Image (tube, rainbow, N blue to C red; front, top):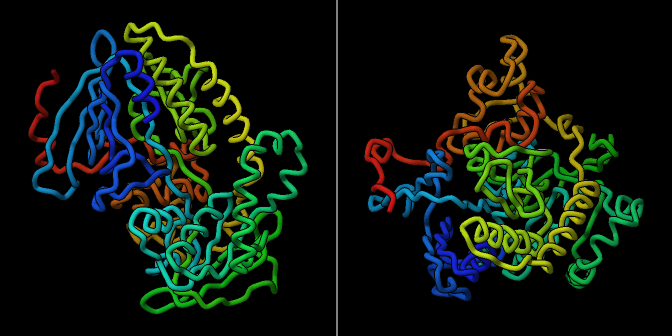
Length: 434
C-alpha cells in the first residue's frame, strides 16, 4: 500500500495485485465479507483484490511480464491476465515458522499467525483454553487478540531468553526503544489477565485422539534441548506456535533476485540485484509493520523515478528504514532458533504433514540413498511435494538434512509456478498485455 501510494503520488500509474479481498494486508487485516473498508486506493492505482502472481518472465529489452490470476483458486470464474512492466515492487511478506513436535498434526494445533488472523479478521477464537508457544514478540499481540475474542490464554511460553539477550547489547535496546510502550501495554495485559509468561520453555508434544486435549511443556537449556525432569502436562483444547517468520520468496527467486541471509538483498533505494525489481517489507528482513511501510514508500518512489518521474528523496522514510533494519537485526539476535529443537523429535514424528513423512523416514531416505540437494531429498522422501510445496516443512527439512543447497528459507522456494493454478489455466494463454 505504501509503495503504491508513493508511486501514484508522483504521477505514475500503478497496478496493485493484492491476494487479500480488501486493502490492509496481514497487519490491518480487514474482513472483506463484513463490509468494513478503512482504506481506499489513491488516484492512479488500480487495485486487483483476490489476485496472485503465479509466474514472472523477463521481457526482451528490459522489464518483466507478470502473470496474474484473479479469484479463488478453486473458483470456476477465475480469470487471468498478464502485464508488462519496467518497474516491479515485490512485497509478498512472510509466514509463520512452525517447528515439528510429536502431535503437531492434530486438529487444534495452529500457527500464531493463523490464530490472530481468525481473531482479528473474523472474531473467531481457535479454542476455549489456548496455550501459546514459540519465540519472538509476535506471541504477545496474538495473546491480546485471543483474549479480545473471549479465549482463555493458559500461558505464553517463550523459548528464548530475550531479557538477557537485549540487556547484553545496549545498542539493540536503543534500536527497539520505540516499541517499549507497546511492550509495556502487553505486559500490563498479561498481568491483568493473570496470564503466565515463562521464558526458556515451550511445547514439546501435543496429545489427543481426534484433536488436541493436552500438551507437554518443558524447560529448555540455552541450545533448546529439554531440561530433564522439567516436563509437565497442561490441559488445553488449542495450542498456537510461532518460531519467527519465513519470507515468502517464490516471486523474488523466480525474478532472479540475489539473497543475503535468506532474505532479498536490496540497496538504499530498495532495489534488488535485478534491474527494475524492488522489494519491501519482510522479504528484506522481519522488523514489523512500520519499517515495512517505510521500505514500501522508498521502493515506490524509486520505481516512479525509474519510470521517468523526478521525486525528491523520501528522507524521512529513509531514516525509518535505517532504524527498522537496526531493529530487525536486533530481533534476530534476541530470538534465535538453535538446532536443539531436533531433540524433541521421535522417529514417528511427522516432519512433512502434507505427505505424512516421519522424521525416521526422512533420515533413512537421506542416509540410505545419499540424497544431496533439495531436489534429491524431495524425490527420495516426498517431503515438500504436497499442497504447501515445502512452505511449512522446508526450513525444518533444510535444518534436519543439511544438504549443500538446503540452507535457509530459499531451499524450497525455487519453483516456476508460485501459486496454485489449474492445468486448464496453463493450457489457456492469458489475454495479451496492454
